[in-house]
Image (cartoon, rainbow, N blue to C red; front, side):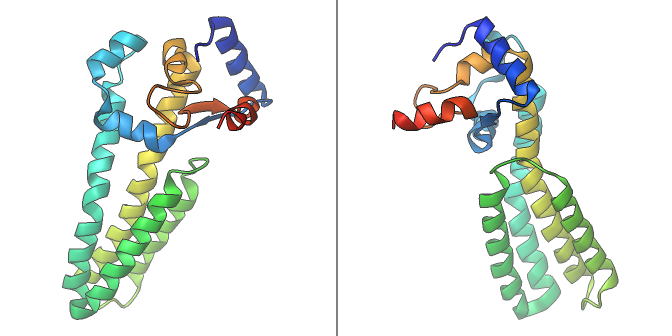
Length: 196
C-alpha cells in the first residue's frame, strides 16, 4: 500500500497528538537488520544509512545467542552436577523471555531492575564459588541483552518511521511476502482484520 507524503505527514502528526498508535513488528525488523538487507542498497532506497543500527542489532543478536551457552557452562562449573538444573532453568528462562521480549512496548526499567537484583544476589549471597556468582550475573546479562536487542530495534525503526517517508512507505501495511504488516496503525488495524 503506497501512502502519499501528505497522508504520511497526517499519520505522523496524528500519532504525535496521541490519537493514533503506530505499531511495528520488532521481531521481523530485527531479522531484517541482521542480514535481510544490504546496508548499501537500503541507503540507496531510503536515503539514509542503516549501517550503525545494523551493526548494533547484529552484535546484540550474536551476544544473545552465546549467552545461554556461557550461562550453561558457568552453571556446571559453579554447581557441578546440580548445574543441570541451572541449565534447564536457563534454557526455560531464556526461551520464555525471548517470547515476551519482542512484544509490546519496549521498556528497559524492569529488565534493569532484574539485572541489578541478579548482580546483587551474585555479590551478597553465599553461593558456593566464583563460577556460581558468574552464572547469576550471566543470567542477568542474558535477559538484559535479549531485551536491548528489541529496544534498539524499536528505537531505530521508530526514528526512521518518524523522519523518513521512503522507509515508512516501504513497509507500511502489507510488505511483499509478509502475511502481516510490519508497520500498521490502530485506525487501520480493524480494516486489516477484515481482509484476512
